Length: 351
Image 1: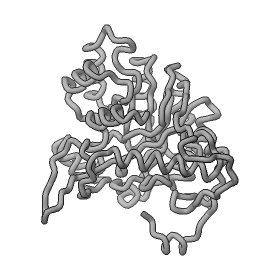
Image 2 (image 1 turned 60 degrees about the horizontal axis):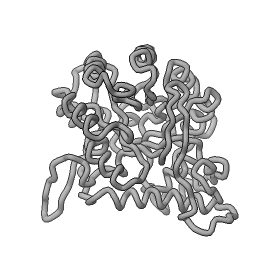
Image 3 (image 1 turned 120 degrees about the vertical axis):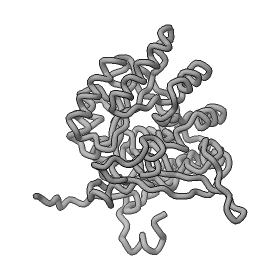
């Protein structure tokens, strides 16, 4: 047993200090980023915000909405769509603004191979971006799986995780991952920290993991913990290359879920993908050897996602103007974090 004494910080523990700026308007801020991925060699151009691969968030409808809005954001489709539905979607709409998602089971690999075989004439065989999602990215099995998938899709950009420490980021990048997902336990419907005692404050995880990744020409995606647009600004300011959102995009018309009405109000379910609700729905229940590490909440219907996207991107642009960053790329170089006391968090709330 050992204890690390270094201070570790979450989004709520800091604010961004404003700086003098020559920017005249928020509209002058450029949010698009351009990346060339280490292993796939592919190029990315767009706003590096990703809808999480969760039920009710990572949906076909969300991908269509983002494309229609022209917002430049992408969607990590949840992995539970039937093969035929995925084939039909990619055939009709392509995969330009989506990440195909898989877990690490043999069934996931078989489904992936079947999808690739269904599209032999497509450039890149129909997938240019792939998300490999697992709660615990520290297992040797996961690293071996990443190498296996890299061999299957050598020209596809791979995002994989989740981890929270620099040494594991380095391991995954050297194993063929282009973008490492960072975050264990910060999500609003994740209970991993309560159930297992395992986790890492998200802001410090981003800072440390980004430093490790960038030294190897890799990238990181902050996954979890953002509840307001200012949290995205903090994540990008800390060095995140992408930010993945779940709860902030839940409860919209694009959720593809049934609406529940009660006392004249309309609600949608939002739940963690390791919750008992998700496992009942997709796996027939919680396996006897594990516990649920997620919860289910009712979210009041929020209408079309357009307004939320405007708030997110508007908040990011405003943050950039406060520190004089003409482009989102410059935000991390212009960011100075100020630690705030627990008393301040209590006064202003933790929302």
